Length: 274
Image (cartoon, rainbow, N blue to C red; front, side, top):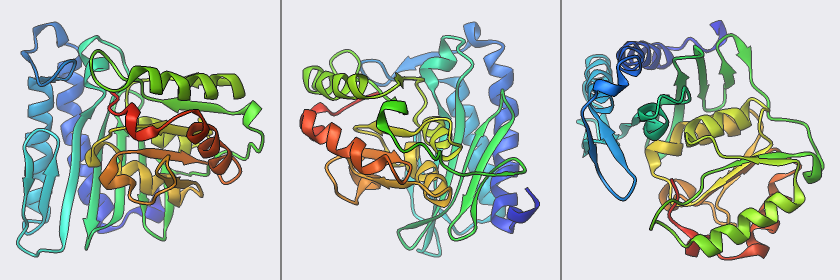
């Protein structure tokens, strides 16, 4: 990834790799981890907390005046007032705690309310997805491009599905049924950041989910756009980082997928997913 080894990439990569070593160790000892419940089916483990501490320490060491928005510890202002890191130390916690080998670290850098760099690292596959605004998107040493599929009937679409008492299940099932009936398949892997990275890599042709948090999607949205894809809200808006109402796709399928979802029901009523 020589073309992308900017100072910011180096900072993010070092932090991600150090935290990943801790996560991989804990993944091998998952039955011994202390786990608490944040919500109906939201868990936080000592692995999440330790990874977040490592990421914060490493990022602060390199950029001491930047702020943070982190999944577990929340928001803290930075001294320069312009930059902040958006960090998910373990996207796919439920997978992790069930020994399902599909999870990642997500780090994004926001400058003056705009995401300018994003990194998603899958430590078990050693795949590091990265983008900087205006420079392009990469996985390890390979340039990323979204898929070239043009027919929705040939598309594979990723999503997240509401669980337990979270979200309007009937409304969401209408959207899911519409996509199931029109595409080659739907996948639900349980890590939104990796779903976005996989759209950027052309593995998925699109992705939709409701009720996501900024740290889930900030890095992935930039990576998709820098790989040539489109991103916005399912209802057609352009404030997806704030609303968490996310639709992404390649250039040919983004609009047809959006029309299909909007025709099936109200995205807002289907929130919130996991």
